[in-house]
Image (cartoon, rainbow, N blue to C red):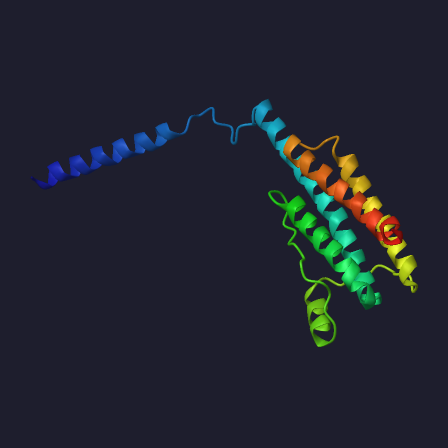
Length: 187
């Protein structure tokens, strides 16, 4: 092939490539397209569900913090509170699955040097106040259980079916915990 033939071939190839690239975009392309109404509705529903999950997990985590504070203030209540605390930790983990970044807390609070090391690793939030009297602390915890159960029950109105079943179970468990913390102890 002669030099002129090669140049003609390269020129033709470059022209074809430029034409192909120019054809990839249209002159009427104004940037990103707006999502259709169904996609916007799906995104709205997903955001609402994520917000619902976050509220539910926050209610359970707040309750978990109350248990930790009560256990730290009244270590003698550990045999009675530890199983309930473990359930609340499992509920917080289950409520957060599939939509939040909340990590489950499963271990009861530690004491000594390990407690100060783990406390410095977490964001510093003041511990909830706990009554000095163990019976009053149990009543406060029962009230916190009822508050969390009420929050989960209220969330049922807007929850998708599968999550609503989970919320109903957690709310029922919270009511049972409140009973065990107050009336159940008398039986």
